[in-house]
Structures are given as structure tokens and as C-alpha cells.
Length: 383
Image 1 (cartoon, rainbow, N blue to C red):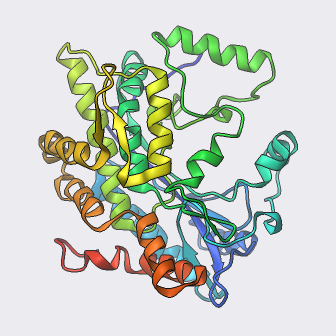
Image 2: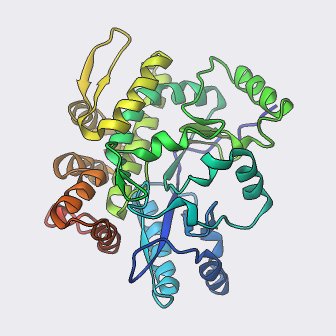
């Protein structure tokens, strides 16, 4: 039996995976073992986690009420992290993949969990030099978890396109807006979730995986959207690594508003729009391949639409919800991503203009320090 511990409301939590890069070369460096003890000495290490590779530090927020609180939490942690990394000659970078780092040279963090993962997944596991963002939204009743999960799937390509930030892999342009999305689903139990009609069906599925040895614990189910029963949340793991705090706040606002909007429809006795699994799968591929230029399938009648056009209509529908949740400004910033381009588009532009992937990495480092893309200067609130 899987006990879901309901949240009191649509609370928020964010996990933000950051890459450690050398200040001079901008290549990935395995320095988490230097960074984490320094954070422990400051008695703030609970806000930071180690990850599979020793070139990564993850910032983890507390349980927050709204997006402004999430932003403040992440900002404090980022500042504290820089107090450690700057003296070590390290910069911070976030994107779905590093533009030119070689996967073969990356070091796996110590620990039985990571060793077991690599032993099982071998070549695919060793290649997982990827970075993402996970957004948790509280759900008040276990009976609502799976309907809301299914209701979110038609909007997964919107989130994928907005966050797409991995056009390069080991120094090559892939032709994908999000190469990370395609790579990560190669791991067992990763990728799109199955759709269950009841919580009992979900429990039987998990039990099957445990009995047959596919997983040893629940968190090894690495779906793009998954229940987190111990936290009382739905965890949205669709997004590539997001390079700036302001973009991350915008995407977090979109996720929270979507969950609340879907939950409201259930409260009002309505039904949630879902898509057949084959449409969900196709939409994921289209968003990963084409990003903001993806034409997505919108319903089971095979009607299609440009993802950015659908996004703009979605923002209008969600604005009243955002106003209620206190994140109207952050949600409106989603339109800035549409207007000025997602990270993969900015990276490709830098590569074309300056001719090197070192310049792309430098642009990502600079964006993270600035807190917002350069093109957003003068757009509304400060970064």
C-alpha cells in the first residue's frame, strides 16, 4: 500500500540542478566534494544535494506557499552557494546539457545508490550528463492525484518547449531543442508516465516493479510527471535545466497554475481533457525536436496547433488563477520566453554569431549571474 500524505494546499517546492564549471575553461569539473563540505561548515547543506555526477550540485527549496517565496528561497541559496564556489574558481551553469563537455570523462559521485544505477544502466547511464528542474505542487486528496497527472500530460510539450536548453551534445549540434528529453527516457522507468484510472491500479503497478526487481524503492520510478506520496505532491520533471532564476519563476508559476486550474475543474464536477498515450508520446518528441516551433496535437480528433499559439491562449485562461495565487507577474513572464526565445534558441544564436561552444557556455554562466536573459532588460520587474 502506498500512502499519499495530502498537502494542505497547492504548496510549492523546486529542485534546481546546477553544473560546476571551471572559471577559465568553462568545462565541467568534479568539484562537488569540495563544495559540499564548505556548505556543511556554513550549516546550510540541507538546502543542497549531491547528484549522480560530481560536477553537479542541486539546490532544493523548502515548502513554500507561492512563487515569490520560491524565488526568494532560491535566490538566498544561490547567493550562499556562490560564496563557496567563487573563491574556488568555479562558475555555475544550468542547461539541459553542457555545450561541449565529454561524458566519458565525468566522475560518478560516491555512494551505493549511484554505483547500482551505473552498474545496471552501463553505457546509457554513464551518458546521463544532463540537468533538469523538478517542480512539486501540493495536492490535497489522493483521489485527485492521478486525474490531475493525466490532465497535465497535454501540457507537457508546452513545458518542454519553454524550458528546452540542450541543443548541443559533446560539442555537436544535435538538431534537437531538447536532446536531454530524448536521452533521459533511455533509463529504465524514465520517460512518460503510464495512465491509471485508480490509485489501486498504480499501487499494483509499483508492486509488480518491486516484486520483479525492476526497482528497489518508489523514487526509482523516474517519470516526467510522478506522484511524490511522501511529500503529498505531484512532481513535474518535464523541464530541461533552466538557466536563469526569472525564467524558472515563470515556469514554476505555469506549473502551479496548471495544477490548481485542473484541481478547480475537478472541484466543480468537470472532467479533465486527456490525450491518448500515442498523442502524448508524439507531442513529447515534437517538443524535444522542434521546441518553440513544434506543432502539437491538441485533442483526440487530431487537431493540431503551434505550441506557442496554444501557450498564449493558455496564459489568458490561467491569469485569474495566477492572480489568486499571487504569481500573476511571474506567469506573464512566460510570454517573454515566447517573445525573446527559449534557451536553446539563444544558445544556437551565440554559436552562430561567435563560432565557439565556449562562448555558448560563457553566455549561460553570464545569464545565471544576471538572473534573466539579456534580451529581457527593461521588461517589467527587475531580474
